[in-house]
Amino acid sequence: MATANSLVAQNADPAMERFKEDVARVDAWIAEQREVQAKNPLLIIIYMRSLASQFRSVRTDGLPEDLKEAFESYTATVGGISEKFRDWPEGEEELMTYVRKSMGEDSQFANRVRQLLADWAKQGEIARQRFQTVVKKYGLTGLERI
Image (tube, rainbow, N blue to C red):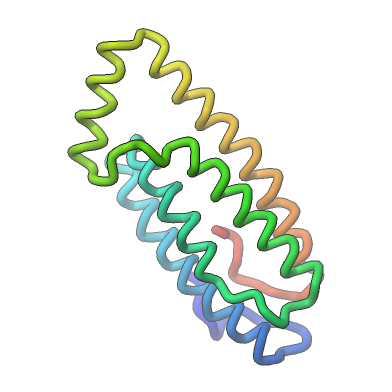
């Protein structure tokens, strides 16, 4: 798990330090969520909405423009994808009930959800790779899960 201290930048400044602290917090949250999702993969729907919120909480003011833009673009991608599930229930039990009911009423429901998740994975990975490229430029480490 990343900590604020394990994230190293070539040119530390207050904005970069805030960013590292915030990203370390999000990284720890992601690690916890992956354990939960291993028990029930459908919880990725709840995870995506929460991930978007976690990303939006990261402070980017004062960062180098390319780092700020790459992270904000990644955040927008995650947020845009999570919007597709905005009307879905929040809780695990409610989500399971909704999915079972929807699958019973619509034979294509599962296929559409799989396609949405596949699109999310593809778009998210493109944005993540772009962010990771900029992260390396600044010598930041410990951000592999982000």
